[in-house]
Length: 377
Image 1 (tube, rainbow, N blue to C red):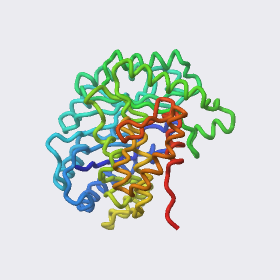
Image 2 (tube, one colour):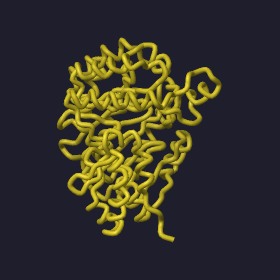
Image 3 (cartoon, helix red, strand yellow):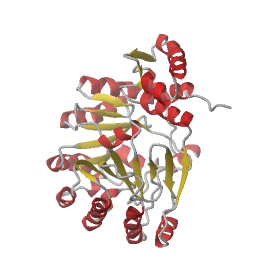
Image 4 (cartoon, rainbow, N blue to C red):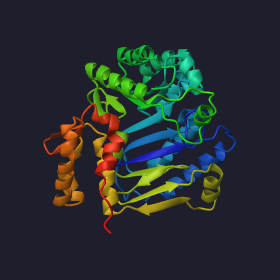
């Protein structure tokens, strides 16, 4: 089974913290759509005929698409790929794009899961982030969305200046009380070349405090565990049976095809990524070519990717899979190295799996980097 990701590179306005590829000018939207529809058949062979079990519209802001455009894309996917009859179709949506008409049109098109970018239920936080929606829209339109889509995930951001522990608790408690089945939570990251980075550097915004982020992450883990959510990946929590199939495929190393500018793809051995420029993407597709770069992963790179992604999950890193990707000696070395992490309370070994503890999850990236293997000389 495989997945397809479609990148819609347009937004109504730019969030201060965002470093994804997008444009707030929608002048090229029609040409982009034609180019995307041209790319789909050109990429038909990438998944080698595997059945597609997840389709994910990300961005940018996919909820800006009109109903006709969305249907055209989905029709082209179904014509060129084998789509599982029970496939998960996810659409990222901003609260300000949600109304009864849009919800019904998405449902009619075949979307069966929404990912809603709430980020906060507090007006001052949304203004601070430069989000396009209001707190009232976040609350009211999330309730409305639940009438149409029982399978919903929302995004929340923690660790931002001004987000007190009390406000953070209120945000999470609201999600629990509403019965949202899936929640993705991210520490505010100050990415280079973003408006937020510039404002912090010029002292127009307060800097992020790592200690506050760590504390609020620990609080989050405790609150959602008590509410019955599985912490199945570092940033993702789900009620039983409500995990994201699409994102889980990334962490499990399954094949996926990325369509649209800046979209990434993986076929099990190679990674490729489309050019992150709307005009150049459109021009290349007019000439009948997909503008991408590609790299072939070495066995060590594939192992290191497995180490990184598996440690982010609640199942952890399987030493048996390490043996298959490398050899028994490498698995033994990783187990030996992990003894110190186990003594320090950062990791447990359960049934031949190395699993990060709650404290270890605070240092997941660093721990993974310490476990990475070097390329042979």
